[in-house]
Length: 244
Image (cartoon, rainbow, N blue to C red):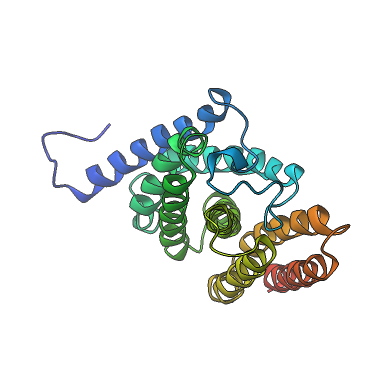
């Protein structure tokens, strides 16, 4: 634990942040076992109910959270035990702490208030990207790669949440808003994937897009095809980055 007699010591501050990150991550991982399962906003929560919004991935896609939770937990533990005072590991901790601390209560909020949940998931995304941009070049399997998977899924989920709330308040037709949400997700993900060069980031976004393909293949063929092309392009980008 940090030495409270020297509160201004940068190493003590780094240790404290490492501890806070572990605590927040444990809460984040435990929360889903204490709430109802979440696979999208309930249409009854919104003024204009929309059953199965086209922008929402098929339910199986949410299983990626199992990998995200375990990998983030391993990352936080490794950071505390092995890299607690390392400057490169410490650089992005505040952003990740904020993101994960919000995430620990996000499902409970989403089950009650989609609007607040949508605002908060964008804050989670910003915090995750803040940490990912500052991720160290070393220990990528323990830092950048789990962060990339987390931030990539949040990129897709933020656009899905925004689109679902927009159509739930009658701001446009479900199809038109879903096209806009898909365009927004790709507009964010593609340049960020090229900038960050962390292959798990585009993989996570592609996983979400393939879930959109499965959800719409039988009903909105053109939408599913474009989502599939976007997913394939992101996977190609991930493979080129993994080989580099």
